[in-house]
Length: 539
Ligand SMILES: Cc1cc2nc3c(=O)[nH]c(=O)nc-3n(C[C@H](O)[C@H](O)[C@H](O)COP(=O)(O)OP(=O)(O)OC[C@H]3O[C@@H](n4cnc5c(N)ncnc54)[C@H](O)[C@@H]3O)c2cc1C
Image 1: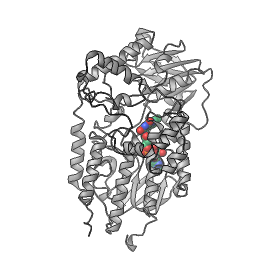
Image 2: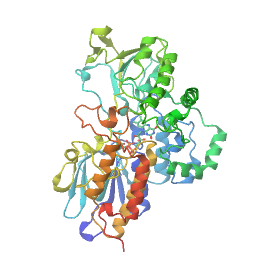
Image 3: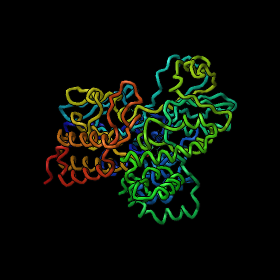
């Protein structure tokens, strides 16, 4: 880079989650000077903030961890197929120390503004401690689920008990013993909290707005034999994970639902029910997500299981989703969730029957019909989700060419190229943000980091001080995402289309082409000499 554009660092990364940590490692490996800023007090991103009771992986532990170092893979022993949050936080700290990354990380530092300087192609990034840093490349690894959302209910601050959002859980343990607890929300986090706190509490009331298609996680400890097999099979596992569509190591099912007889389908659904975590999505029939009848039949099977597991028929019916099919929202995986409703200490309030009216000093009041009213609590757990995809990027104060605000540029939802960059914001990238893919998160976020690092290496080699995606490339990608999102027949709801946040633009926020589409555009771009980024051709 030229003398005139001297910067504090070449690459400034925001976010110390699994994506940002890897990006820092890759940037340093390629000889860039780099620094990472993180709002939280420690390493881990989502695994730092979400320390609520019961928080654990829905991805198999060893498929979630990094694959770039066999030594790291060998020396770290996950205790369970789906590890709990404390273990994942320990793992990420171990990685940071092993690769000596901590010296380039600053914690307790929130980015509040970033302005692009057109004259020399640099970014000036300001933080809540009043400091500013000048960098060539700004990489926001700020996550899709890092801005917790709590509904704006009247009186929320007046509550005299303890209240926490699952995504901002305190480091000191919350004492649930003998307490009357409310859990608001029944998505992935709320369903993990309920069975975990149940043995301790006096009572729990679960406030449900929409039921979700929960199925068993089927977790268990990793045996010594399995540990040995994992080590021996590292290369094969890495190959599978680096190429699989979903980023999981699950087998692929080539069948369409109606290739099988009705009896065979029921047997297959029973096999899926007993399979680990996301296999119920990744190993399901090929057309389960696209054929409404196939989707309905699998949902009916799950509904039957819920009716078997939950003794009270009225409660069972309330726990069966009616507004979306399996996969229309991120399906939660559970350990003893449905069974918890058989405990007399647990009750369910359906917010469609009795909407929440206000929070009072003493508890939560719902509308009076259908037996609603005030219930008193000692603790309220807000398991009410996140401002998915664009939340963190839109509140960072990003200002691109001509001072354009990112949140204004994306007022109707994001447009991107490969979920990595948007035109008008040169030298600014966001791996792991909106439009990335769907599946086992670190795998496709890692693909983005590897590709992006190649782009930066090429820019440096060719003396390009400004890297900016072309309009055509961004339009192609964004059109692909929007069109693909129309294909499913049973409707996508919730955070993937922003409908959980009042006033948020309704736009598909994942990459409907999936990881395969990322592979394709990255290969094409490499073959095109990175023309999508306007790099001058290599000699
Ligand atoms: C409870 C929970 C369980 C999950 N389980 C799984 C799972 O099993 N499998 C899976 O694939 N995915 C799972 N996910 C999705 C999860 O988001 C990803 O797996 C992963 O955390 C993404 O990593 P990341 O580094 O991209 O983002 P994050 O881990 O979210 O890290 C982003 C970091 O950026 C920081 N940041 C944001 N804005 C700023 C700012 N302005 N200034 C400074 N710092 C900032 C945040 O503080 C945060 O630490 C889960 C998510 C949650 C919430």
